[in-house]
Image (cartoon, rainbow, N blue to C red; front, side):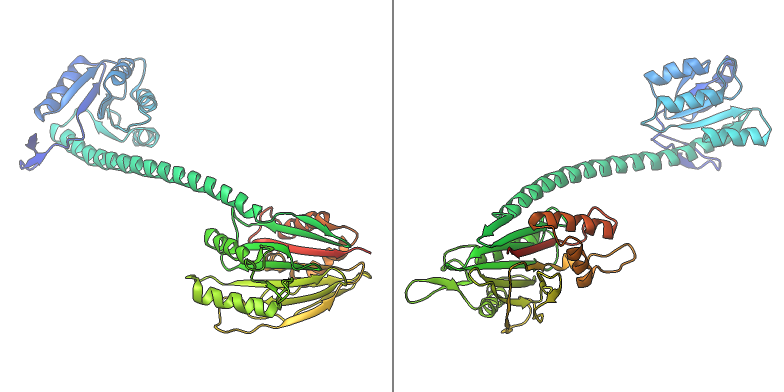
Length: 419
């Protein structure tokens, strides 16, 4: 449908304006405005008051409203306010018709709810130009509404996917936690306790233990680079190499010519793991590891440290020994070599093997807890044992970091030699 613009050229009437509502208490004024609009091809409905305009809008919600400002009963401004409330989910253009010359009152009307105003008596060309402008604005508004609907729909789909993924991760967390068969176990005079807290749903830290022959206990702590699903899957795969009590299925065990199962040298175990990761796994991940064997008959300790934090031994008299010399992480350097170290636990001693999620916890200023901070906590809770100590440790970490959440996975194994 076409009509002439101010210059007489052909101009398309914006098709977004289907219906125009004219509200005026003057029948003559309504007839004049209606005539102007219908000559331009618009569909027009009339109302003689704001109250009647609301009733008609509820039946046929208009795209544009031309309303007189001064009417008996409900004024044009009051009608506009209630009209906006009626059409909360759809925007319509509202033009006030006024004989007012006070600029402050006109500005108030535009600031409150109206989109535009025209001064009576109306000029047909000016009215048409304002409607053309209103059409452009409504077109942009409708396009924005459609885009918002699309975005809302997309967000709803993303929300569903996120919920599904989160549920899967919760199940994965349960499976990962199930890799730790027991959190605490007693072996004669030795008590072993395990701590594992993931920063997210799942994490790349893993701790565990296994019988290494008749008189040795194997202990391992793993910290895979990165966070999330990939790290968790890598940690679970590594657990498969170290969890079994059968020598054929556990890379850390060996069998002599008499069929007796015992521990393999820890530095050889880590070198083998390094070769497997670099040559048999298609991954960019690497990990730090501490693998230790404890002689349950004597307290002798043999371990290898592959990039993992130094173990801390708290002696019976409260003093500390930080043991180990570091070493390369696993999965970074071809044919890397590792060294085994030896120490000894005596009655009353305890050893804590931790991940860097503990020592690298930081306060709000960025100061790291570090090894010395760990020793302070161990001294503070010197009389606390097993899982009770870990509970105190986690609470102190949260206080130190001023947060209930950890930025990194937190894991530890503690062995206490009871007198």
